[in-house]
Image 1 (spheres, rainbow, N blue to C red):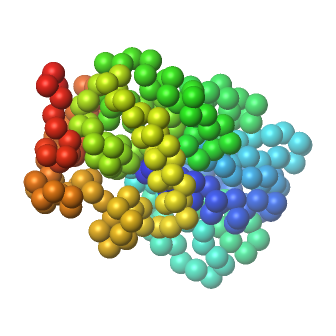
Image 2 (image 1 turned 90 degrees about the vertical axis):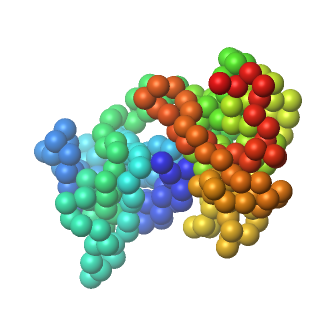
Length: 267
């Protein structure tokens, strides 16, 4: 699933392509919105909130609406200039927004819904502070992360109710860089504030580039993520992988057994 910096870049792409323009066409290829026609609406802006995309519009009657989309695993927004061919099959398109000279096409989107802008908070108010957003608060993020000190660190980082924007890659890399096993109880992490600051720094740096790197080397961008069976870049030990998390929502965890010792009470 895309990380918060990827979603931030998608929001910026849509914002630059659509904001201030009037829609000359809209095509919602999901059953719930199949009859919706937003022609004549003006796009105000698109912003990300964690892993969610919010495109705000004003319709011809002055009503304010938000198109809420989520990329999930396979989704992507693409800007298609007049005369260009779509870069993915048409059957994958879920939303097509047309303004003069270009289209914004949302392919394989995991969530597509239209709601009054006034209801945004009711929909997404559960999210923790956004690492790349104006609502960022380190104090609130730390309080939420440690509300249940027994939760494994990796699981706590992935919980968007604690802080919004971290996916599996950043969770794995942050655990490694900070020297904690992914199963370390979050209440036993004595440098948690430093870890959270590093998370924000990583996303902030990577939001400006297509290749997400946590090592400082774009050719070898990751320390442990998807490097199971390979040598640790720091000590040479073999990177390990396992599945962890709540039943039905397990995620792969990666770690170096030498740099990140398994907690003695880990199961």
